[in-house]
Image (cartoon, rainbow, N blue to C red):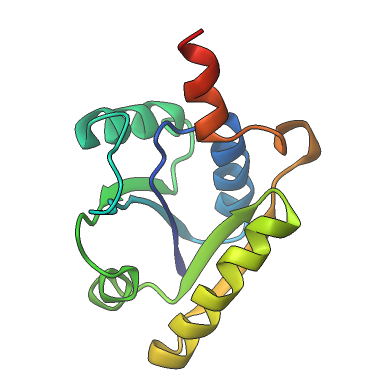
Length: 136
């Protein structure tokens, strides 16, 4: 079965890699799909995010990197034949934010969402925190 691990990955973190590694052990293929949100200004250009993810996952033979700018994730999943959406969660607030989207995706398309809690050593890391501390 194929699964997609979507995100802005802006920038990708060790927490993202942790989830990708664990998911790679559960699925035949995991696609890390970089999404863009027109309402947000990205920190890194899309090409840099794709290159970073490709480099970070180069040792994971069943993990690929793709992008789907400006499209709904469920449309990407349908076109790519992907039946599971993977979401990493760090905190209860992450789950609170992600659950309504998971329920909507399932209602609209039947695509299930699997929540993977980030390992404790990576649970405090966020892309926003990485960016904020890099500019100090």
